[in-house]
Image (tube, rainbow, N blue to C red; front, side, top):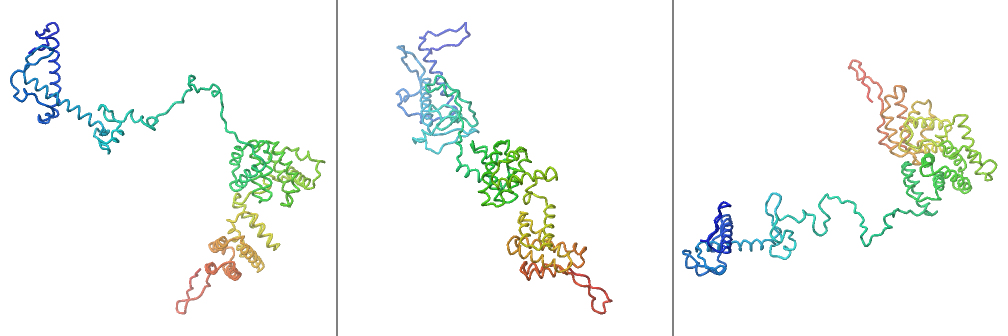
Length: 500
């Protein structure tokens, strides 16, 4: 057999055969070695390899030598070596055929190395289309580009793209776009749109009292020449509202000055307000006095100059405007000479005042009512307190005043007042009940200062039930103090314990 014999580099020698023939034989031996290694790892029966014709020499036996002609030279090769090479070549062709056939099955490898088969059948066209593995049967079966490729994919998860630079060689490149600045344009408001936009903002401010939010909302609008109409609209709405809203309006004007409005805007607003006083008086008869108080408060808050009122001397023809300026002048003079606090001119609204101050005002209201007997005035004063959630304190203080009074006059007047307030729904059923229950709970402490408090309370509660101020259930909750009585004879003259 002709072959190349590997020797040390200096001692390599060749047989007498042709070099081409030696290369062919070497190639067959290498192929036989590869196939033998594969067959050892994947046993295949010889019967399964009979998918092609058999040569006559293979049927006769495997022994002997087989003459073959390679490149025109007849050589003598052992029959067993050629037969093994052919068997291994057939097995290798079958292996390649099976691997190419299974490449469209959609199998992939999971992270732990297990094979995962897709739902699509391997022979269906959809399975071949959806298969993202290489068609050559290479790779580990993972998605292309690590999952960053495919239709509708913008890259791997978490990838951050840098700002794209403009290519000057782009046919659509426009040099003017480099210096172009884009801004949102807000159209200026006309008179009708101004009223519809700003009125809800001011009305909502009367509910929440956050002047900073109003400043932010007004800053988003293009007021342009209508800035001076903001104070005019706010004061006009406050004239028709209650004292707490007027106090909020004064605080709003002070907050907006320097942020959204200027001093000239405030001055122009009060100029327009003085000119429109004849129309405002039709809806609010006390408008001149209220506007004068707004002017005095603005001067105190330093959003109007001190010479603002002086500039109107001898130039006012409207009597309403003159009354407003006179009111402002008097208040400022009282502030300088008598120490009047104009910053608390309108008072604090409702629940913004401390509890101790509310209790003092309730006591003053009741004392004035006992002296005057004017139920209407007492009801108006109670409404102006703007504390409907605190009316139970009014009921409590009224009943305590009855318990501490002497004579039946105070009882009748307080009962009349509670009846009037209950019928007009100024004091609700819940507030009335809560006031009576608080007296029931504190009667023990009240009895220390007023020894006959139990009997007076029972009498007042009966009168309240007969006039319809309270119901029978609340009347039955009234505590009573039993009289001391002796027990039956024969018990040693012991006293019966008191029961409440």
